[in-house]
Length: 255
Image 1: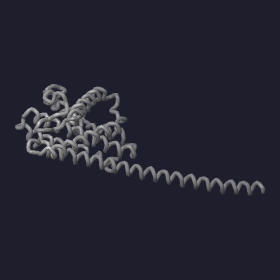
Image 2 (image 1 turned 135 degrees about the horizontal axis):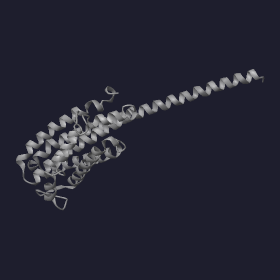
Image 3 (image 1 turned 90 degrees about the horizontal axis):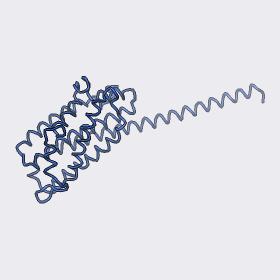
Image 4 (image 1 turned 30 degrees about the vertical axis):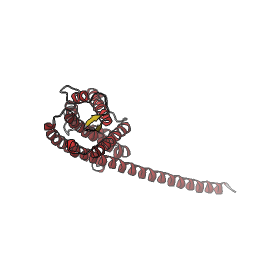
C-alpha cells in the first residue's frame, strides 16, 4: 500500500470517526434536551400542585369549627404534603444565592424563611381530636408566638417576604427577588427552566403556608371574628405573588 492509499484510508477513517462523534454528540444533546424538558415540566407541575394545595387550604381552614374530624384530617394531610414539598424545593434550590451585594437582605430573607419553616414544622405535627388541638406541648404558646406583633410574629415575617417578591421591592433597590434570580439564571436555559419554577413554588408555598398558620393560630385563640379578614387578605396577597412570578416561570418569554 503506497503513501497515497494510506492517506486516503486515514482520511476516510477520520471522516467516519468525525461522523460517529457528531452522531454521539447529537444523541447526547437530544437526551439532555429531553431530560431538561421533562424536568422543567415536572417543576411546573410541582408549582401547579403547590398553588392548588394552598388554595384548598385557604378555602377550608377558615371554617374548621364546622368540619368533621375526617375533613380536618384531610386538610392536615394536604398541609403535611405541602410542608414536605417546601422542604424538598428548599434543598433543590439551595445553590441559588443572592450575592455579596445583598448581604443584609440575605440575612433578612434567611431569618424570615427559617422562622416560617419552624412555624410550619410545628403546625404539621398538630392533630385535632375530640374538639381539641394536640400533638405539641404548648399549643397556646405557639399561637401566641405566631400572633405576636414582634419581628418573629407571622405578620412581620409575611410582610418582609411579600415585600421581597414585589416587582419593585424596596428591599432590593427596586428589584424583586424573582428578578435577581432571573438575572443570575437567564444565560442557562437548563437551569432556568427548572430552578425558577421550583423557587417560585417554594416561595409561594411558604407565603401560603404562613397565612394558614396565621389562621390556625386565630382559631386556637378563639379569635374567629378575625379569620375572614385574614383569609381575604391572604388570597389577595397570593394573587399578587402569582402575578409577580408569572413571567419568570414561563421562561420562554423572558430569555
